[in-house]
Each structure stands twice: as structure tokens, then as C-alpha cells.
Image 1 (cartoon, one colour):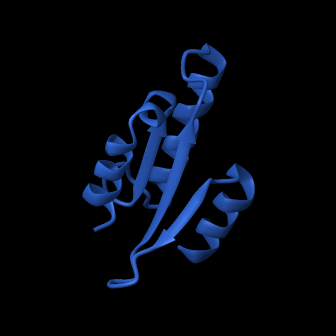
Image 2 (cartoon, rainbow, N blue to C red):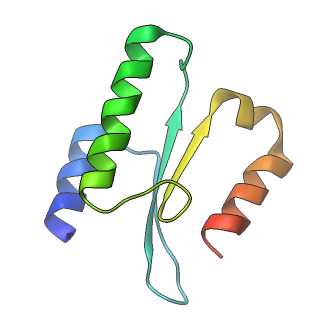
Length: 85
């Protein structure tokens, strides 16, 4: 899995890779900005499918945030608390 993770990091330029200091679990954090653009939406779906192929699933060990999440810092904190801790 580590090689697959490195390849994903090189290809997708993730915003964050997080390691939980208590249990060692690795999380990927992907930010999607232009979701309303049809081409971007298709690329986003492909990214999510590729993450799933190597074991990174949203709401488990993959955090996916979108433009509207940035408007509410409480929402970002909620996502962090729910997913990482």
C-alpha cells in the first residue's frame, strides 16, 4: 500500500497527508474546488475511484472537502473530528 500511496501523492498533489499520532492511521485530504465544472467533476470522480482502488475511502481514511466547506470553519473542524479522531 505504501508504494500505491506514494504514486497517488506524486500524481494528484494532495493538499494534506495526515498520520494519526495515536494509532498510525494515514489519511488523505483532497480539496475539490471547481465542482460545478463538468470536466472537473469527471476528473474528481476518477480521482475518488482511484483512491478507493488503493484503499482510501471517503469518511474512513479519505477526507474530501469542497469549496462550500471553506465558508464554515466549524464544518471543517467537524470533518476533522469525525474522521481523524
